[in-house]
Length: 151
Length: 471
Image 1: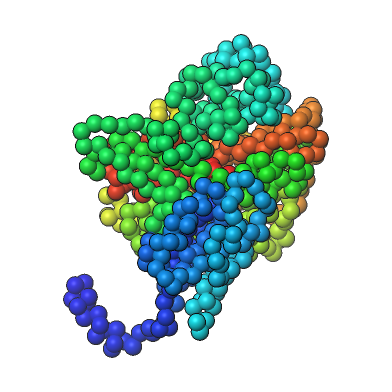
Image 2 (image 1 turned 60 degrees about the horizontal axis):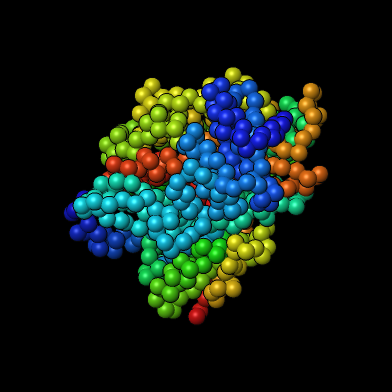
């Protein structure tokens, strides 16, 4: 195995493996009050069916490593502060995506005392991914479209 | 279905004590109506019936029942935080839904030489729901853990109030995607119970298929999550792929990967023609074969098997005392499952899954799910031999309509209860006490004395929802 690791560069070169796009995007997810549907589907984007890593997309553990903040849920009052902390921990330039109808403000709750959202009221939203929940394919499609943008 | 028994404040504790002595069990408690003019209600369940004991909340504080029923701890804390009730004899009454900066208001005090705290969340490293864990540790050994949830409290129960019974169902559905069928079915059964309706054979069959399809993708997910919990990527990926196939079956047959909008009050919004039920059955059968193969492979993965035994033990006595339900309770040797003895679905002759060695650890919870998956596959293959018709619920004999209904359904995580109080055709109060709600205190208990790095594994072996707890 270790021999293989040492020779990896050569092996890759010799095998002419597809290298994907010369672009990448590190995603940090924050659940700001979802039903867990968007989490299941975002998790599924990394399963063997959808495998978003092959497009240069990866879900990272820290906002400090992230290019894009993917927010799910109707933002609750209790999650507003942790959400903003995560946002301010990101390096610039940074993008914000609203994942799912709740984060977009199209939820069944309306305006309630328990909610601080929609996300747009708290952060500038660059990318909107509708659906309840959006399927893994739809999530990948929207993020890849953002990646392809010239800016 | 469940007549409300009004009792005087003096008789409240004695009534509950007598019910427990007669073998009835605690099923949940909730505040009803407006504080001061409302009531405090306790659900008692037995195989024969469900009862609601109600007392006025006018005189405060109310007597705590936690001396009799430890499992009522969270119910009373929630009623305090969200409905302003106070309880005598529940001391300290720690904050549950209210978030305060004063750690002593919500945390267990733990002190001693070398004791320190590890704070985790509300935002976690993976794609996980939001919630906070406070570990009290010495070195890497966990002494105690306080879960602090309700970060996702959306006010769903209050939002449902005033809506008609048809449209209020969506609030039960949005409580949790992964338990959407169980929660909406419990809701529908509660409303049908209040209206004295009972489902016919077609409706029972359709609902049973939906509930088992929900269990199928959840159990596959949970086995994959346990593999991820020990860092075994091949198992995590294999079961993630199986779970996705199960959700693809859901989408193909019923138009939604989480089976949203498949349950309604007194009818079934979905049906399967013969060709569709045949195709679904074939896909389920193929998944059955591949699941068996993946499970066999997992038995030979030494790095997984070596991590399961003796970790995160929830013993039988503790599971009973803390009111644990579902796979967590059955893995501890409690042979209880609402599917056995069920009269509103199609589970004739069902017996709860039981392990030869119900050791209550991570390994037992994993093996129990695999065993339950077998039953689920068999039931689905049997139910899908016929087309699924729309079905209906019709007036039940010997039952009178009431303003309160109780629905109880075995979700993939265990017994889930929905209470619906009606004012005419509108919902006056909706209360959802899910299996996850019942099991969080048991998870916290099972964490003690384990190593901190084993917590993700223990957590995943319970795989509880935050969304349907926080609501």
